[in-house]
Length: 219
Image 1 (cartoon, helix red, strand yellow):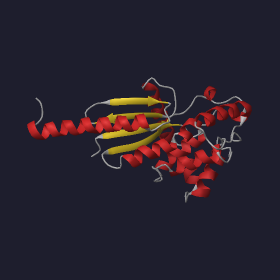
Image 2 (image 1 turned 90 degrees about the vertical axis):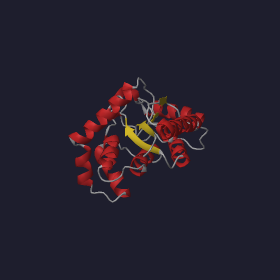
Image 3 (image 1 turned 45 degrees about the vertical axis):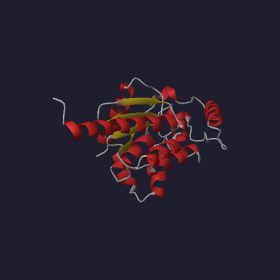
Image 4 (image 1 turned 180 degrees about the vertical axis):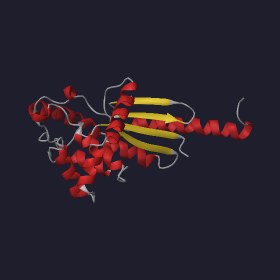
């Protein structure tokens, strides 16, 4: 049983969530045992998205420079027709969980299709096509699931949980231990603070387990 859990709250089209993927990999590789990892969707409001492709490029120049990236993200996914409603790829990623894609493969492929290849996956049919071209998924089944009340309610719930932590920056990492400790990192894209926190929680949890083995539960 995992004594520490790490939950990453993300949005498929968020550039900062894209830049944080190596950090997500690093902490999972660092702690293959005793730590449970999960990701959840947290939708962005329409007004949080760029209002033009030009503005999107400006954001990408800033984030790419901060991350010292050798390449620039692709803003061609932007579509003014959608007026900031880019829920579709998030629903597709969540629906994928019901088809066995609970790991990072499907959601990452959707993200790269937009932010690297410029695919307009803000449209549900384009998002379905992108996903099904890569993975062995029935497009009708995937679209039906993505538009289902169950999937959309799950996304609404995870988004509300994200906001309940009184944070607004994605990605967010919620780290919790089995002895009740919790740490919240919002907008962080580097691994060192996360790794240090997980190590501290694992150490404290092991200490509690040792005490219990020697003296039993405190009553």
